[in-house]
Image (cartoon, rainbow, N blue to C red; front, side, top):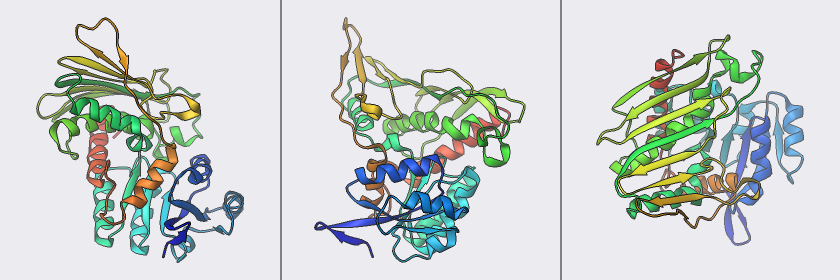
Length: 340
């Protein structure tokens, strides 16, 4: 059972994995209103001990099964390499633990569908950790479109990319570790384009009716950059770009029949004290204007979304159906880029 603290129910989190993203999660859990750290598991128990040391009474395990058997854990954050996600989600479902799983949810659309089915059968909440989806900035964009501020949405242009040195030993460039740009950060761009299409069509599981694309395979055989053009039912189009050796700006634009939205930082609004920036430019206006957008703790917002969803099975802004449709679309993009 979850803890009672200060008059409210608190979710006790277990963290599987002890790498950088797990450390960021543990550092951010205190910014949630619902979560505390209860346990950490790593194949290297010394790393689990080091990560758990900052939390009072947090357990440290040298294997994942021990954490899943801990009755003091209500929900699990999966922060392992991509290929382990599907099996761990299934194990969490069997153990009755709610799940927040790092992106991408799995390696393939088929694995994602199986994960969704396992979660539903077990009655647990399954949420993919696309943290931008839980931010007030994203709700600001949704509301702007719903209010018709740019008329009918017609086209999306979105990128998520960075550039790093090719290192065959790094998981980013290792096919066996689920490496490549599309799975690592292209999932964000595809998710965003699908999100806008889903709002427009009122279908959170919508997939592109057409997808064409390409990319570049580096010497290890994974794509280090890729692009795709999408056409959705109803006619909305999108261009998506990604790369792990691509010096892109990682911005988003939504063009409509009467105006344009520019989102300067779609993925980590508010990070480092930067203010969210959603710029509205309407046809005929000489100048654009910033839309008022708040920010919320990046990890805290998704942590709270999992706990808030426990009574109705899925997060309000991002369902497992949504994640499955993104994974299925990524399958197609990887094939188009020669990596699938």
